[in-house]
Amino acid sequence: EVQLVESGGGLVQAGGSLRLSCAASGFTLDDYAIGWFRQTPGKEREGVSCISSSTGITDYADSVKGRFTISSDNAKNTVYLQMDSLKPEDTAVYYCAADRTRYPNMNYWWEYWGQGTQVTVSS
Figure 1: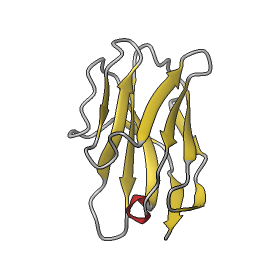
Figure 2: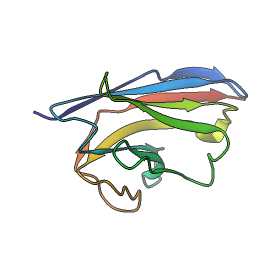
Figure 3: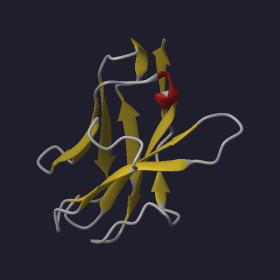
């Protein structure tokens, strides 16, 4: 059974940092790409970042480039999202998702989703 479990969310002041984790089970990161998405009430879910361990491809939304870094630890089957210089507009529920592809694209629907973790950035 495929399972994705996010952790690491919380409350932080603007300019601070958080590191989100996405622990995957039921598949290996060699075969699946992992993406991070976020959603706030009344808005569509947006892609934040994604990674393919097999190809090394990473991608970021323009709004987070230079501030967020995605990485993977295949031994732990876990993907991380390091979020620095956080802004109040980064406040959202963050979801990780998995899709069986070596060429991830945040503009299409991904196959598997976690339950999400809340990130709140205070001004």
